[in-house]
Image (cartoon, rainbow, N blue to C red; front, side):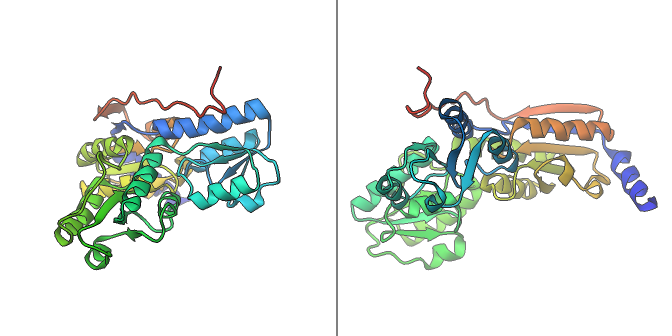
Length: 323
């Protein structure tokens, strides 16, 4: 008991203010994907099967599961004839072919910005390029993009791989980027690739999504003014993990938390200012809960730093669009 009281006193003794980074929490692609599942449940009733997590957040998945969504890893877990949703991260053509072969009714919730990367992969590979995909191995988005042309796409996860990756023809090489990477991380890898392959071609516009960039810019400024940064998001969320790394590079101690229960009071010792942001897949309500907890611990001031105003809205797929 004495140790717990000591930690409580240390956590509350110095805390003065909370800085909220904006934008934070849901992006347009995540809102669209969640709406797809909710509308499908309303129109067709449960169960609605979802391949993989619709977005990478434990609270979102739990809420949708409570409404009747059934999350599966692969299509062989889906009963014949059952309505199936593809997640926001996209799928490889082989997955679409399997669904078509089984005649599963499918609603595609892939983020339009991920769909753009898939289209670029097909275009670059179709003209004979070796495509260098900057991204993290094992992530659903990179797996889906690799599946567009597995014989022509090479994954480049880090600077070391950029130094050693081989291409069929240095005069015919292009690159793509996973949408949820940190911009400075991707830029470092891209610098190496451009040095090695002067003819390297790229997409007409950045692959890293606007929401990822905006959240990283906002937390960079907030982290520079904070003793501690809390990033609200699940451990399997790539964009949330990148926010932790960006905050650390800006000079703050930073931790990823799924919610209030993950906050360790020892982190708050000596922290007068705590910065808060949330990954693009984390519900805004989770941030509100964290702010309320810090206010209860002694934070007297809550202010917001806005790096950008987002007004992007993506149209729902025709299968669930309101008439």
